[in-house]
Image (cartoon, rainbow, N blue to C red; front, side, top):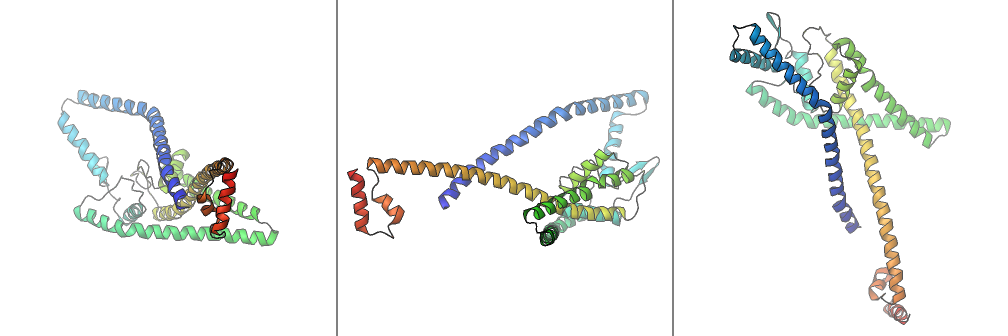
Length: 318
């Protein structure tokens, strides 16, 4: 059994590695074909606007304009935006800091906001060091509670309607559909109202956030032209926490499917090898090559040495 497991591991890792690299390469090719033309067009448009601004305002100098642009970028990273002749603050108030803390320990890491002071960066390291394990433990507990609720509902349905397989399948389907509604399909409507995003943008943000990919191209509560209610970011923080637990269960289910399919392939391979071994044993018996080793493998404990000798002798005689 140990040798078979070692063989499976030895062949399983290269196959998975090839599949992984191929899948990533496929994604890279598709994204390059879809996004590269838009990137080139945006770069050309930005460069054209840059030269038009310098041509229409001769008092501007290229170096000074570049410093202004760089200053705007650095200020935006610190949470400061320009609004006419004034600046907009508020990303590092308690609500914004609370949401940043959530994004840090959940490893989402949007990247649109980060500490700029040395003390803030050191604290962020220590905070994440203990916060990430705490977050993982909490997500595991929430997931277990969700699973327990599904199992209890399935058990009650089984007792009421005397269902067995149907009850479990029905509750798993209900849990999947309810999770899709609560965490992926309905939240984009709220984002459309509060952020002004389209439904597609809200759905994209929902999945990128709950899967902890966190590109940072869409982040809630960052539009300086909009006024957000005080409960908004707190509710979204709870949505992130429970949504991550639900999506983790879905991903775990997908992992189990992949592993079960892999085990099924291994079982087929083992069955083929067993059939070949049986055929080889049959050939060895017919040609008189079935010696004492086969006797020791098949039942030395139950047979005596005389029986083993007799069996070998009869095989040779054939």
